[in-house]
Length: 340
Image (cartoon, rainbow, N blue to C red):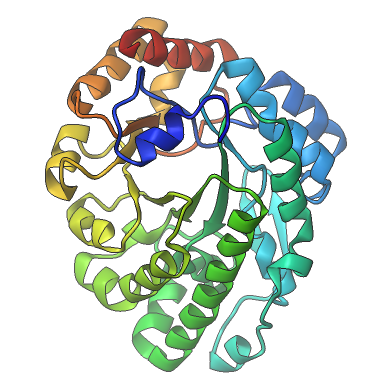
């Protein structure tokens, strides 16, 4: 167990001496040292260099004082081993070289062995585990979000091609989701075996669905993932735009439910159960505001979380471009000092 175990204790629903905080995309945009590295190396190059990826993973621990470090990686990386080529383009995100169009394309997807195919991620986890004073979080993309990138070719806010496959090619959709589910279980299990203290499943785009479609086309696979990795390492389920079916998200079976800023933390707790550990949920845009705004918004969330325990402070999504390091540090200090 790391020296600072606040995050793990909160994941278990325990009361902690102060509220733990970590931030999605904390090892990136706002850190000058990271920007210097990125001037010379691509994101994928960093991810595939375990020593460098470990260094970047730990930058926010040293510079911000956060209570957990998420492995510096990208949810798209396993797709390469499955035979899906992609590029990570700045300001655009992942771009698939050859999108999935039909069940034939799905059948050609390869199974992966995370231990060998994703060895650089496992090495990053192992190296970071030895160096870190805080828990290490492993990660993977959820099947729906991964499938949407593979089918659309890049981010599409309307998800037209994804929904078309869901409705018009149910066998193709089912096979794709099954393959991604099997890959995700194996990938997260190997990260846990390599030393990840917790794992987070990112389903960033599933909020484009309504409750019924989520229940029919997504939930069975997400349930299978959390059932398949259930064990000693806590699991976190991150979604955005899912306030209308938060109860279904909770039923997927994660230990911690991570919510975005589109719902009050108090309402979210009342709907998923007061004893369920919860993560969130500051609007990342608040960090572009004044220190006074950051403080008042943070204190409101802490008040909504209540004194029961089991709250991990985080953003409702990742740190936005243009966010100042000083503002992020102010947020971390505010959460620690006001809850200590």
